[in-house]
Length: 75
Image (tube, rainbow, N blue to C red; front, side):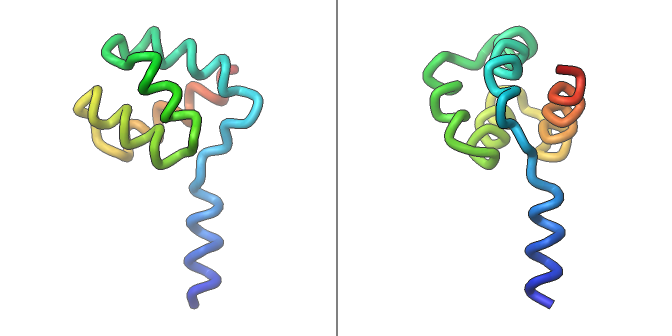
């Protein structure tokens, strides 16, 4: 049962990879309150990225995750 839960979580993780530099530019454009310092922390991982964007934007975790996924697909 634990294994299934981990697989679902893995599938839901956002894959940034090579898109990080492009996504970083979009974040700066679409979230003007995000600082360069925030972006440095965000590059550490998905949870940090979502958490900081959520705090800066007032959007829900789900909304932020959906924005990242749709934006990453465009690039």
